[in-house]
Length: 308
Image (cartoon, rainbow, N blue to C red; front, side):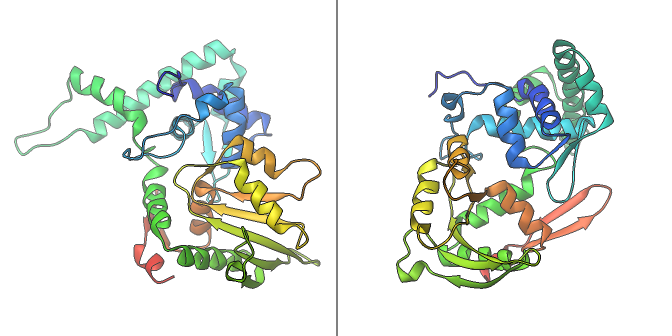
């Protein structure tokens, strides 16, 4: 895998904007990821390149770089996102899209470099004898490592939250998922895993309006990519029990897994990955405290997860 060339996060700036435009001007994280990677012609081989276990980052490298690109587009004022994690084009984003692709890419790269320079200036160290100005060597080193860091305004709290979720006891993670489903409107939730239902952790009744229907769910703690076999096995376990399923994970679903979830002629399976799970916990105030300041400040509350 080491010999496979990957796009940089700057290569993904323009594809991310095009993806939001193709999706009608707004997009949830999962569909934005999938569409942007398609626009950028990212191959299955490139998507399979993941960070090593000892790295501070996890999952496919190209997805991590795409999240960097999306974060920087927000800093440029080209994208905005709601509390529910929905990204949308701004007038400035539309202005980039009115340019030719080559001109837009050049403008995005230039604006990204300006933002990076501002961030570097803000992060410079301040020793006792005064402020140290970063030199050329400092800048070159940071340019080489910045893609491995977490996006400035998005990932710190998410990474902390996912780290907690990934080490939770399976039963505790399952209880957390049930709590979240209840907050989202599910009733009559029941754990079925202990009764021998392979692949199924529980079932609940969802009533969005006048009608209600049962939904079977599975909770899986993953550190990397979740493949299509997980979806196929879960659907097989659902056979004869119900027509709707939900898989909740701390990982990232591969394109093949997403395709399998919506395969024609098969019962649909909804997917909630780690990023969406973080936003749902935040939206329902489970284990997170959101403080509104000039910028949003999100604090993870580890004690909450210990008590689940």
